[in-house]
Amino acid sequence: MNMEAQLKMQAYLDGELGPSEAAEVQRLLEQDAQARQQFEELRAVRSLLRDNEPEYRLPESREFYWSKISQAIARAEAQSAPGREDPAPAWALLLRRWLAPVSAMAMVFLLALAGLKMLSPNHDYAMMEIENYSEDLMVSTFRHPTEKVVVFWLTPKTYDVAAKPAEEIEQDELMYQ
Amino acid sequence: MAPAKAYKTLSDEALVKEAQKGDMDAFGELVVRHSDKVYARAFSIMHNEDEAIDLSQEAWVKGWQRLKQFQGDSSFLTWMTRIVINICLDYLRKQKRQKAESIEALDEEVGGVERQMPVMVVNPSEGLERSELRERIDKALAQLSHEHRTVLVLHEFENLEYKEIAKRMGCSIGTVMSRLFYARRKLAALLAGWRREENM
Image (tube, rainbow over all chains, first blue to last red; front, side, top):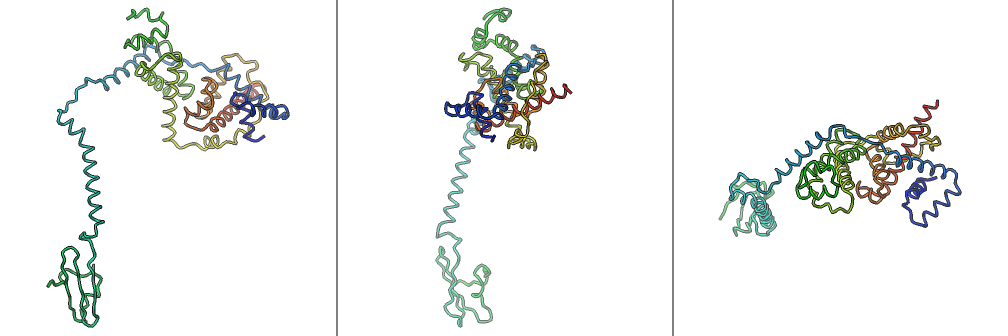
């Protein structure tokens, strides 16, 4: 008998099945001796438990038990009493109440601003373009997008700044005209 | 307010009415009257004396705090029993998050173990006094995991339906069914086994 059938049989015992499924289990019990045996075991255990629930007594005196409960109630009420005075002055309370949400909003605003600035095409992080019009003359052009400065750098063939990637060029290698 | 001595003669309903007005002594009488039953329900789930005392006390504190919500749809004891059951289940959920499951418990959860148990053919209660039988049932319940014992307690002793048990335990109806099946078969095997040992 598979697990599904066994669980259905148990559900039938516990009155948890609808009429059609209950009829199905009834037929199984009529036809299958093993199913009947299993069903009887479940029924016996169910009856045994329901008729013989163990009894447990409180292992301490009721007066002591109640005294602990009444103290716990008194403590809980003292903590949640509406008239309980807060030692902080009113302005500090107001600040405490509004500080957290205002700080959070300010942080979000600053992060958004920083993000927008970084995404903007005109920010200072734009790469400087390097254009080399002529390999013979070794002319390099540097253009700063926001400052609107263009630098033409003429180098001898032995000292090829323009061959360097832009990020490796030192500031003093540039000459502004 | 009724004099303190008269509380013992008042019904639960009358005591609840007094307690709802803030009469702590009336509530105290309710506690004294029903402390065993509320403790017993906590112990039947937890099977640990200290935990059952703490959790049942917590239930009484909650009962006092929520007393004004008690409408009398059920008896006061039934209402308090529901509170202590929920507190025990919350406690078990927190414990479960903290502890790793034992292999045996996982095996029980996955299922299949109960199929290996032979069907009980011996009448485990034959020749036993009621108190002896209850002791054996208690001993057998102690050997179940919290989850299996809880399903058994809620179904057999609190008469809850599968759906209600699933809701309280935060699991599926299928899980309730398989846990109940395992718990019943395990109990049958234990009780029959002890009987066979005696008859040998």
